[in-house]
Image (cartoon, helix red, strand yellow):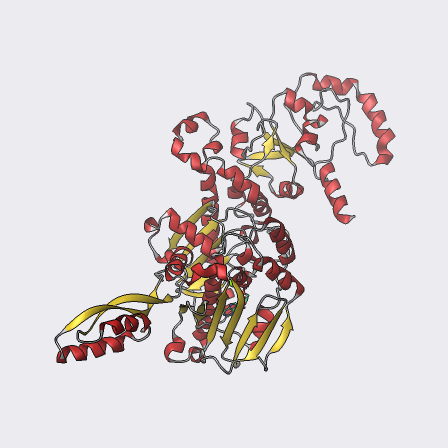
Amino acid sequence: RSNAEKFEFQAEVSRLMDIIINSLYSNKDIFLRELISNASDALDKIRFLSLTDKEVLGEGDNAKLEIQIKLDKEKKILSIRDRGIGMTKEDLIKNLGTIAKSGTSAFVEKMQTSGDLNLIGQFGVGFYSVYLVADYVEVISKHNEDKQYVWESKADGAFAISEDTWNEPLGRGTEIRLHLKDEAGEYLEESKLKELVKRYSEFINFPIYIWASKEVDVEIPADEDDSNDEDESSESSSSDEETEEDVDKSEEKKPKTKKVKETAYEWELLNDVKAIWLRNPKEVTDEEYTKFYHSLAKDLSDEKPFAWSHFIAEGDVEFKAVLFVPPKAPHDLYESYYNSNKSNLKLYVRRVFISDEFDELLPKYLNFLKGLVDSDTLPLNVSREMLQQHSSLKTIKKKLIRKALDMIRRIAEEDPDEFFDKEKKEEVSSDNDEKRGQYAKFWNEFGKSIKLGIIEDATNRNRLAKLLRFESTKSDGKLASLDQYISRMKAGQKDIFYITGTNKEQLEKSPFLERLKKKNFEVIYFTDPVDEYLMQYLMDYEDKKFQNVSKEGLKLGKDAKDKELKESFKDLTKWWKNTLASENVDDVKISNRLDNTPCVVVTSKYGWSANMERIMQSQTL
Ligand code: ADP
Ligand code: MG
């Protein structure tokens, strides 16, 4: 086109598109989900703006917040249209030509080797999945603050933008036209599209329509030429109403008519927009929750979430919420932990989507949860910033944390592998097999978050400590809990013993364990760097103190010989202490913590353990 302006894609986008267009990835269906989810996001945005400025919606059809799907079998075009916020020319260049999100490069690399596109939506590059099925794509868009533009690309490294002077004006919103590849003919079948929308986009909160054909019986005068009839019926495509009217009229005059089939078109609604969180939790099936999770999390796999919690809070602060523990931790969960506050909860106020960037809803350590909150108490027509300050947010947050921790505890309670005492084990029926080993899997993905919670959330420290798992000298390669530890404690044992280090194998050989093992005390192995910090905050559990066995203060019960030994080695310890005084040694003592090893260096009670010294050193280097 003569007035088109040409642009090159950001190198990363270009590479991504190359991979997608040549992809052998079998689940090509995903493009439709991505497009519908983008349309839905755009509708959310305009609806949000309309809360404070009604004018933005316009009038008539423009004000209808809906999504429309249309097929053109002859031209092999599939189009998806929304009346959302639309894109200005600048938006088109920025949003459909560059990727801002970090980690995309790593994703592209991974995709190149694994061919797995399931995460595409989570990486903020879902739009480009159109090139799984199309080799040429046009994006026509009209934003309230700009003219109508067409963006187009054949995925050949470049895209073009032109002011739109030839298409029908959209009013507002975006239409994506996919010129389908020859092998993607199935997406021209209404039945296929209906099935996809039903399956994947069931939880979109805006009506989705398809321009659907219907065989209708119409009566036409009997005396017309037979050979003409058939042609007429297969060709007539658009306004069925008119034809019917005509028929009606002729019917009155000539009673002799006959029936023929005709194709009529009409907008057919494909989804039920009743939000799942407004329904009674008892009436929502597991399958529905799982599907809802996938749509919410932009997760295109079919992995089941570990758990969910759907509840309705009543009282001063009324809200409904659905929380999920995802089946996998996102790739950058801890990478970005300290410099991002991003929560994964969507906030709605009375069914209207407000934001998914609200950090006041959950504490940082629970950022791995997905879900939504729909509040009845928060005001609708104030700015995001003002909402952020609202007092009922505190109450919501408190309840969400409780519910979240309950939900995680339930994963453990329902897991037969988690039952350590024999009595309970017998209660577990075999139909719980599906839940077997779930908590260990959960721990593997999100254990670190629980530890960070213990460090950061003093109010819920004890609840979180219950969720803690570790290996120990008695856990036999499996994971144990603090409750389990306590149930195995020896008579008279007062403290919970632990040791820290880089790995279990190294710790197993530690001289600090000699005596404890011999005396049959259980010792917890802490091998994650975060454990050192953890143990600075976790002082006690159920009235038991924690004792690092490599630190001063280890008491293994009094021995009658202790005093005697102390007395007879008095001179030696004194000499030794004096000799080492210049080496930063505080004291030299007779100890009962060893068995074969003659002596060990122990850290003072309030000092850093040797392991902590090592961690700190590696951080400063
Ligand atoms: P994401 O949706 O995760 O941001 P996408 O690749 O799906 O990533 O889309 C990129 C961006 O393009 C969106 O963030 C949005 O700004 C813009 N966009 C895509 N589709 C539409 C649409 N139908 N209406 C308005 N903007 C859109
Ligand atoms: Mg998207």
